[in-house]
Length: 68
Image (cartoon, rainbow, N blue to C red; front, side):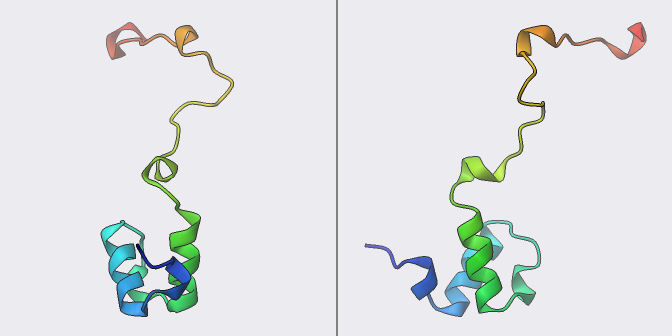
């Protein structure tokens, strides 16, 4: 069983944050590391959707640069 994030050692939290790509993880204190790791619960949450939520993908059409 894995240890919950708030109960982990500071060095272990820092290592997880650095491997996870959290910027500035090496300079964060323990509370900042816990907050940053809990704010990013899973890989899918790390990505931003490139289009607005109310846009139908079928309505968006690619236009090549020479057609502008």
